[in-house]
Length: 156
Image (cartoon, rainbow, N blue to C red; front, side, top):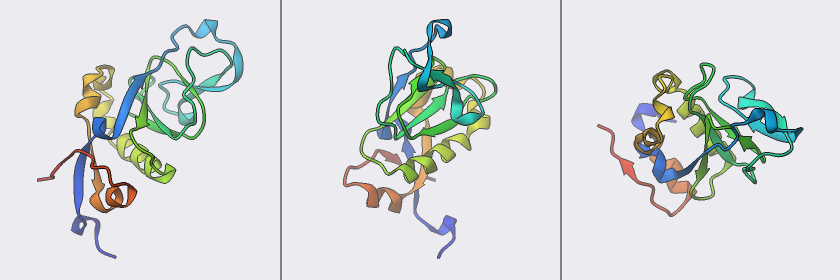
């Protein structure tokens, strides 16, 4: 097995892989305790703040990445969400534009979170930041996932 720097890597724009939707919950006092995870901009517990029964919107089906826009030191942290959940306004859901295996999304989550120090400056509070954000992945991974071409920028 070769070294990572001997493999073919490329930078992919986040908005070519995902659609983004900011969370809807902002009036926490109106929420009733229940069984749907409420993901907030937290740096612990997979971002889960509590469990509710009456959210404005539920992200159905899971297999989605949640990305903290700001929060308790957790801005830029990403979490893989495997099941239905609700989001508060400090978090953005990243919906894959195509079917992607959960282990690939978990890898992407780790790659995004590794850039937490850069993103913890509040840059993610501006929606435009997500459209220019890039991640590096081995090209072989994407070739095996789909025939759809994802927009990429060659690394220098």
